[in-house]
Image 1 (cartoon, rainbow, N blue to C red):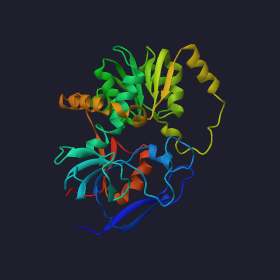
Image 2 (cartoon, rainbow, N blue to C red):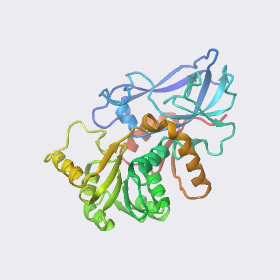
Image 3 (cartoon, rainbow, N blue to C red):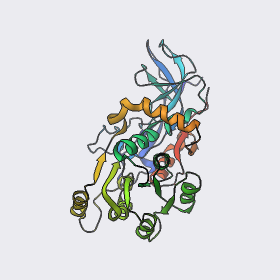
Image 4 (cartoon, rainbow, N blue to C red):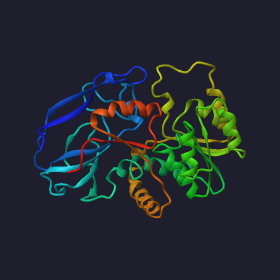
Length: 342
């Protein structure tokens, strides 16, 4: 067993888009554990857009990562040492130990995955925060009805791909927005969307209007920017907008150029009686995770959900993969395999 622990820490706060220089790989001694604690060895690390916000020191729903602290992140780990009566050696758990090889826990917040889970990394995606976000945001806030049109951006991403498939299960017409022909084709041919338009095209607004001839009843917002500009004129009366992210704005250092369109948006919300609600998944819906997990497991077993994972090898490659995530270079849920299973 190794005696060192690799950690990726925040070396500096980014101005605009993150760069490799904002991260530093440290090597520290393997942490020791006390009574009632477990030593966790990371096997899979989740990379998600929210991490960009945690790199900044602006006020948000969670404290920022401090300079020289380990970057935050969800992990799937194995117990390599235990002084806790509830956890056995080799047991798999879902934890939040961040961008490092090893972490120590007193058991609080750990979710048991068993001794031999079939797909342990799924706990970071379809069975984890992204799938949960899609499920609750769409069904609780979006409240889709059979026959309605649901539009989702980042349509092949970890959240968007789940939103679209759940909407299809509920009998909706689903239109995705994705970056590039390959992703759009995947959304239609593999995920079962009715249509998908390329946000990189010059005529995005026209293509979206042609794909949504009956307007948009539910728009699941996780991108913002020019995508929302194309969506807004198509929103129907009583449309619903679950808001879980704005990835197009995460690297912005100032407000966008051009006229102030806030009054136009407010007017649309008023005249069309549109519901737009932001949410933080575990803060707002943590108590409903068992409901989600049971339903998603059923859909997976019935073959109603397709899940695509973008796997990157090596903890040292996490910064580059994360930077690519913010640029839309991933195809599916981005996961780093940090170590081999025991």
